[in-house]
Image (tube, helix red, strand yellow):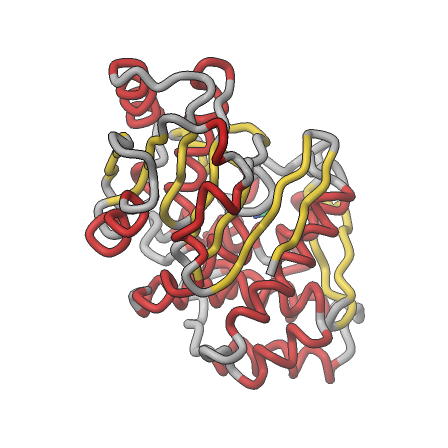
Length: 343
Ligand code: GLY
């Protein structure tokens, strides 16, 4: 399927399907101009999928393999990539391909955005999380000591090419990480996405679910690419989730923390009289169905990290509350109000 994202900074297609990576340049619409390509990937993905991509890219395609994991989203590695591009003669009209999950997408996307003041790049997601969320919308970043994604840009890719076949090799932990973000989309969008998650994602429903998530994200990003309003909805579960992630020193994967965060917000929304019990029960049983762990930390220690959330503006957190399945809303709260809300 092809979904076109149209924003003020340009438009790009998101293509999903089995085997679509074989036609990555053609489908991205940049084939006639490309003489040189470079692939950034990680050491988990490289042995599985890099060669398949190199086979269909121009001869002499450059390759950069970074260590897997969030630790690679750092300033030093970003600098090394940029130095590598320059030393290898990558030029402004060449194309960079980010082959991997959220970490590779964020890092390579950021590198593409600053190298020679911006070169074209294509996202080729290989994880569920990247397919339904991080590869679409143009967010790129590296982490700073003070927190995740604190240095970055919105720099849309030229295309997203999502080969469903790549997801079949996902390790269980990565799959679960993606399911946390999938629960987020199911609660935000409701309807068919929630029903598909309730039935259980399998090989028959996966591609359709990804298409629905991409289309939901398309609507959000087209309305608010720079995250000054509606796009903040995509942070459902992330305020508590990021804090749990920090508390666990990245011991819990991002998507698992998001699921814990959604559970905390659902419980808080129920207690505050915002969320009907029936919807609360449906959300918590969905989270239970996918066996997400309970948050093992007391809320007090988790909340200690919320003060550093980069999304605080004007002294208030933009908290995404749940009024029903498919009915979420942004409610600004002071830190104190948020503490009372989730405690
Ligand atoms: N991952 C949330 C967003 O793209 O805004």
